[in-house]
Image (cartoon, rainbow, N blue to C red; front, side, top):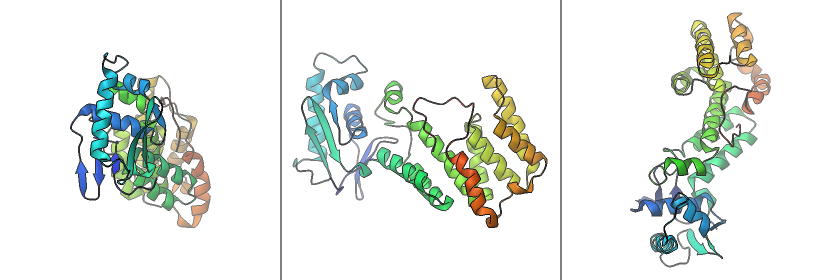
Length: 288
């Protein structure tokens, strides 16, 4: 169904927008129900599954009646004439419900689609733009004001990992474009937040090196070694060690040179698919 109206934001507090108008559903349970249905937009979600998720596997005796009441309220707000004129319909099919809308109107699906487009993009500039747009979909945790932490973990398997992989891939694409100096503040902050993610450490080291800060890049490696041994009882992978050795030798091939852009794209494509790492990975990990 082409989207002619509502846009749905689930990455952060649940919001529904249409043009300049944004509405907030007052009841947490309604926000949660809408999120559950939109995460599976275009597919029937069985009533039994909705009851389990809404009530954390312990629904009350009158749970079905409460669910049907929430469905009626959602329809009254989002599709009052029951025609889908605003780009959304909530349909009963068998013993389940189906949210019918353009998946591009749901930020979660738009995020995944943009990441997929970035994977297929040959040029670093295109990858960076697509990943920037994808990451802009995020305003906070999935269903931030609607789901419990336990429910969020059940619903978002692999989603946070995909966000971090997109951040890493965008940083790598930006480095390919020669934007190491502009990237440094962001990478420094990301490495502080995620000290065990080798792709971020690698990108930060390269950005420092290309900015003429070789001692800081080498210090970053030593700091990473300490973090890995302390937290995991392991050292970083051979690839990060080899990068350190190349920097220690002042390998000139590590500097950005536009004339070698095509060769650099080939060497970075390996990282794009996900560098080997001892970093613990969430279930559903999918490298960008």
